[in-house]
Length: 590
Image (cartoon, rainbow, N blue to C red; front, side):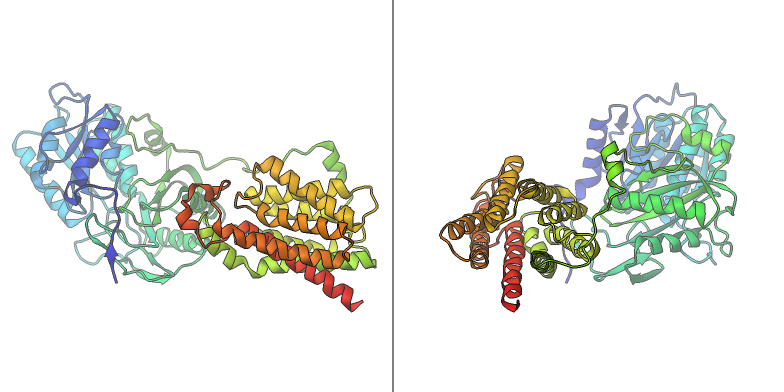
């Protein structure tokens, strides 16, 4: 069932005018025509038709694609942008007002995306402006490569490639070219560009319900920028596969949408559709560059990445490829004050990887690797059993840890610890010198560095502190207890937390206390270990009633955390308890 979409807006009917007001308040080089709500036009503040001696470049269309088109108004790009209502072509009167506002004796060029409403409204405005004595030309951009070659008069849809045409035309106009020449450059650019989009969600219009057209686990290929259905709905695939498909469609010699073939130079644009994280856009960019170079034999001269022509809050991206030559690159590289124009970078460069500098001591150590003894001592067998059980316990509760972490953090505690646990199990097979307890603890600390983030650092600090206490001494149960305590103290020292802060320490500290108490009372070491694991579990459970004072959870209200244990503490209790029981079972069997 569709649900009401969430938006940080006031009245849904005012979103476009309030966007324009916010834009011009933010960028003083922009103004808007005082004709709200019918006339929604953003213009350069430094242009007056009476004195402007360049060709005016105007574009526009329905709103909802921000920053397009108003964000590309500025010296070196658009002179004006005509804004319609959300996903609705602007009326003729608004287009005509924009022409009158910025067009001087050099005339104006209208760049229009290939949608019927835009063609008609901009077309009629062109004819009316000509009847008033203005010199006006219009270039239609249809860069969509998803749909089969058109059979009728509709043609290919205008997508994000239009932005590159804006830039070429704006730079040509700034250079002082005539209207005829500016139009010719824009038309040539429009014939050299192709785009295809992929979406993971459908956009939600202000004031309307969120569509459930795309089900869970589905993505849409070749959709338009107004939320209209694409060419196909498919199961979500890894981005490598998605990008390969998109590039093949754009560069298909059968459709011949773009005049690009092996050996050519290209410009690419990775465009977010509104709700796509920069992380995912950069992944897409990196994969696109590599595939174009290695699989299609193309040289990537410029790369532009960002959310440039969106579809409100749609998750997904489009890829645009334009054939490049020196004249195109000159126009794209020309200076502009348009606020939304991205920084372009050269895609052809040496390998991006650079070796990590290492101290001389590490270089020597690389030639001496730890290895598993061919035959394990009794202590080695116990250590192996404890480590294996502890790692498997963490793996078994990965999903539960993520669920708990989702209540207070970023829902990745289980996944993070899972990385460390799997690395430990892998290294346990071949690399741990299990007959040497101290060195084994040190190696465990090295293994868990794969976890990254705060957890990786904390566990590494713990391991190194335990190792430092064990190293060079005869290891007795009390020595283990003291080393365990040293590791806990190191976590508290560098992490800043202590008992009652709702962290892993709320499991570790009770375990350490009980372990010391039982050993001091003469209790059998294995029994003391098991009893201390019960204390760890009880301490972890007690975090349900604690207000977090450290980590991301400290920003969450106490009400939201009530009855949810700290996942870090529960993880400690799980692996510590599993290790204790494994040692108990091993001793009982021997």
